[in-house]
Amino acid sequence: MSLYASMNTAISGLTAQSRALGNVADNVANSQTTGFKRTDTNFVSYVTRSNQQVNQPGSVIARPDYTLTVQGTVAPSDNPLGMAIAGQGMFAVALPRGTEDGQPVFDARDFYTRAGDFNMDRNGYLVNGQGYYLQGWTTDSQGNPDRSSVSPLRVDQSVYNPVPTNNVNLSANLPADSTTVPVPAQIQVYDSLGRLHTADMTWTNIGVNRWRLNMTVPDDTTTPAIATRSIEVNFGAAASASTPAGTVGSFANGINLTSTAAVEGDPASVTFTADFGQGNQVVKLNLGNYGEAAGLTQYSGQEYTLRDISQDGVPLGSFSTVSLSDSGDLTVNYDNGQSRTIGRVPIVSFADPDRLQKTDGQAYLRTNDSGEARVNDASSNGSGKIVTSSLESSNVDLASEFSKLILAQRAYSANTKIVTVSDELLQDTLNMRR
Image (cartoon, rainbow, N blue to C red; front, side, top):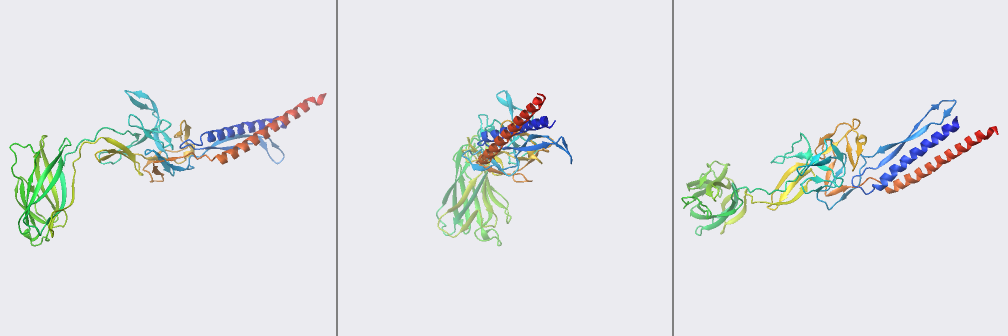
């Protein structure tokens, strides 16, 4: 009977509009939730019988229409570890399930999210506001990522071990116009414990285009003590007719200072050994290349001119800050000026992200319909770009949601009228026998 069918259709309409109202309520409630993706409503009709002679009332259901591919507004954040994705893709995250020996134990499933409000917890892990741990690729000592698997990224807040000085690079000009007064200079080196030591140098002109380097190392504990470290440096034609004037041509008469072979274009360096209490330490003084106007030169001037000096030793360093780059590199910075890249944040993309399974905290699980998870570097293979010190806002438009709210309310009220009228007609039908 059509009256019963009409009532059933209206009841299905009430159910569908109730679900639509629930989606609107969820969207409005999460309008300020970082990385939240709104859920729209897709109404689907079902037909029981329909042809050229008759059309019987069917029903309607409300299906969720997810919007994971709709970008939310990317807004700047004061959080240096905050990240947003401009474009497609998600962050790989892990869900903790408890602790063991003071460290978190993670769920075996892989979760994904757009909520990039990460902060470092007391154990050094990067955790977002929903409690999910950021996953990424670990890197080797050279900063190269291991792309074979992802794991929770953890910042090591231990010290940066000292590195003894092995190379000192010196770029300076000896004054060709001043041939009588010895020229003093210094270099500084670190030992294996991170202590700083000074090596004193004296450059003395001993002839045309010829200088003698004398070096003393006050902190050297070598026994017996090294009384003399010296070597002669010949510039330009003093070494070879083809050597440009003013450039290092050769070394001679080294005492406790050894030099490299004089070959045009090869490195020109002097090496010495000292013991700062931790055993012999070999230090190489790099003076540029033979026959090239770089490093140590002898040109016109009255005074010694230092252009640049650097060394590869590093003192002890304590953890200072952690930073993220646009490429996703996670870098630990130390108070000795050094830094170390410990991981890289990849972007995970899917063939149909709207088919992911939604879970708590703006997180999602892969499904067969969503396709396989493709893990790539940011801004590659269709993956979005990482925007650092930023957060992606909810993609909910409150004005649009209030419009949907009004429509759902009116549609619900209209369906109640259908139920009321059907009930009255059924009552009239039952009263016909009287």
